[in-house]
Length: 323
Image 1: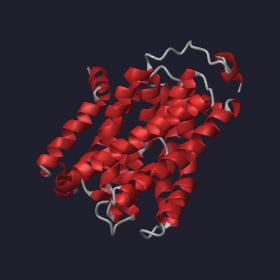
Image 2 (image 1 turned 90 degrees about the horizontal axis):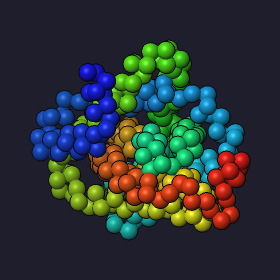
Image 3 (image 1 turned 180 degrees about the vertical axis):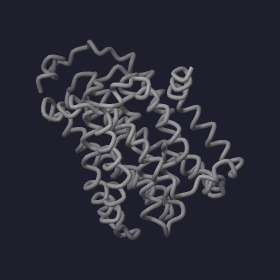
Image 4 (image 1 turned 45 degrees about the vertical axis):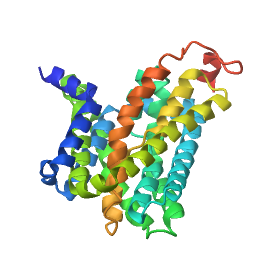
C-alpha cells in the first residue's frame, strides 16, 4: 500500500504541485503555516534524498564521458543565466523578479531532469552525470555568475550565497551519500525517497505561493510568461546545440532536458536567504517549479518519438560511447 501511494505521488508530481499551488493561491492560509525557515530544511531533504540515490557509477561518467559532461556544464551556466538576464531586461521586470529569474538561470539542473530524460528515452547516464557535476560546481559558479549579472541591479553577496548552497545542497547530498549504502540494503526505504522529495518540493512551492499570493494575483501572468519563455528557450537551445555538434539523438535529448530544467527549489531558497530586501525574488523559482514539470512531461512525449537508433552521420552510438 505504501509503495503504491509513493508511486502515485511520484507519477502525478505535476498535478500534486499544481493542485497545492492553486489552493495556496486562492486560500493562502493553506500554506502560511509553513515558515520561511522551513524552506531551507525542505530543500535539504530533497538533496539528501538525491544523495541517497547516487552511486560511484554516477561519478564514473565524469571520467569516461568528460566531453558530454563538460559541454552540459558550460551550456548550463551560460545559456540559462544569459537568457534569464535578457528576458528580465526585455520585459522590464522590477528588481525582485529580475533577480529571481536570473537566479533560476544560475542554478544547476534538478533531479527532475533525470526522470524526464528517462521518459524521453535519452541518455540517462549522461543526464545524471551532468546533474551531479553541475550541482558540485554550483557553490562556486552559481554565486559567481549571479554576481556578474546582477551586481549593477541589486546587492549580491557571493560568499553568503556560497554558504547557503553549502548548507542546503552540498552537506545534505554528502550525508545522503554516506547513508546510501544502508538505504540500498533496505529497498523499501529507498523507494519512498522520490515521493518524499515531491512532497518537500510541494511544501516549498506552497510556502512561497501562499506568502506571495497578492503579488502573484496582481502580476502572475507576466511572471508565468517569462518563466515559460525561459524554460522553453533552455529546451530549444540545448536541442539546437546538440544537433549543431552532431551528437547522437539520445545525448541531444539529455542535453536539451538538462539545460531547460533547473533546480528551482534551490533558486527559491537562495532568493529567500540572500535577497531579503526583495520580497518578490523567490517567486520566479516557485513558478518555475510548477511549470517546468508540466513542460518537461510534454517535451518527453515529443522526444520519445524521435528514434534513438537513428545514427548521426558523423557520430554513431558506438562513437558516442567512446568519446
